[in-house]
Length: 320
Image (cartoon, rainbow, N blue to C red):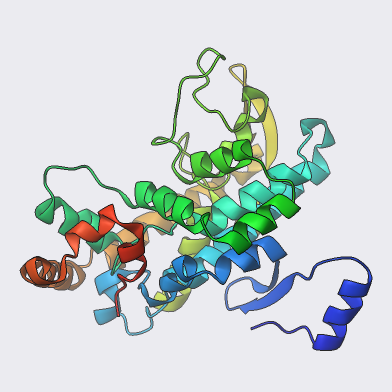
């Protein structure tokens, strides 16, 4: 999947630089990913996403919807990098450093590590029936899977090479699961440990709990629409071009120009259309109920529901 040759790799090595890999993505074209991200991609914890359908039962209704969480995660990592680097370039006063940028990219890459077979079907339908005693969401599983991934010696060594600290790891996990990772800090009204309130806008890039406008949605709106054959009128590239950080009620937020109003309206209209025509399609929901019932019958023999308690077992649990 890399389109760089061995000669070019030798040339980069001779310059003392590690090699970015270039992926040819059907949505974003040729995208470059940092060597640390490639090291994470090569782990079994990330590779399992190749076998997890992005849209669950919708594949049985829309034959083109065969894409998976693997490619979506690459796309989110790319868009997260595009947005944070654009903000750094256009607003140097924000003091976004290389560690911030790398952490945001890693969070984008790893935000869906915790999805189970058939994505939302697993944590939205199966687990509530199989384990009604617990509250479970894939963001929580993603953080646990990220912790398990961090036990890999090669990943840990690569993290150290780029001077990422325990605080950076905390920051990554907070971006993956903003609501689940909040902790009390010495700063009033600021719940996070990874970064201070002066960089609050960084928490809005991957998973935006403020208004729901984030690069995770940018990628899956474009990717799902492409594979489903549904028109997507939202232009995420335009949003990235005009996004700026502004101070609102004493806190820094990612904001858009007033002339971007209709583009954002198109974004929410796209979301509504995807739900109406695909995610909540009557046949899709019927099929997902059937799959969930099959999981429940298989659970006593295959321990599907208890795999979420053991990340080694969960790594082997996919949709194929």
